[in-house]
Length: 124
Image (cartoon, rainbow, N blue to C red):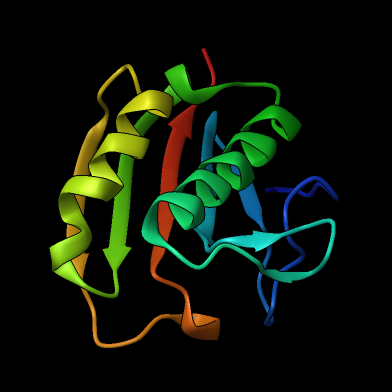
């Protein structure tokens, strides 16, 4: 196993890694909209938070030497399912290869986040 870590994405807020590489797969922990430059969530709406989440995911993918086209599965969490359409409008700009996906609404997310994305990617 290899730990994937970058300062261009937020540091883990608990006892876990940003991502792990094993057998050609990258398993990334869920990313919320923490701006790594200031260490907190700065966006207040779903579009702004979804943009930051995707940037954080992209930074982790980049640190692993891959990009969004290598993502095979995402799991998305929304604090409010009413944000589904707005979230998708941002999501589809980044995940253009249309990986398999689950998207669910949850009661709460860490740090009061509005959305979270975790990914599984493969190195070619």
